[in-house]
Figure (cartoon, rainbow, N blue to C red):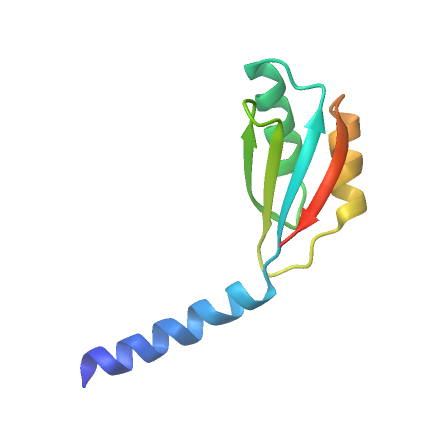
Length: 93
C-alpha cells in the first residue's frame, strides 16, 4: 500500500518535467579542442531555459536539455555563434 502511494506521488512529480522538457541536438562546426568544449558548455549553461548541456568533441555535437521551459532556439543558436562556432543542423527531440 505504501509503495503504491509513493510510486503514484513520484510519477506525479516526474511526469510534468518530462512532458514539457525539450531536447535539442545541434551539429557544430569549428570545435577543435577541449577548450572549445568547455567554452561552449559554459556559455550554453548560462541560458535560463537550459537545464543540461552535453558537448561531444568527437561527434561535433551539442545536446541541450531544457527544464520545464520551452527551448528558445534562436537564443541557443546565438550563444553558439557568440562562442565562435557555427550551428549547422538542429534536431528537436
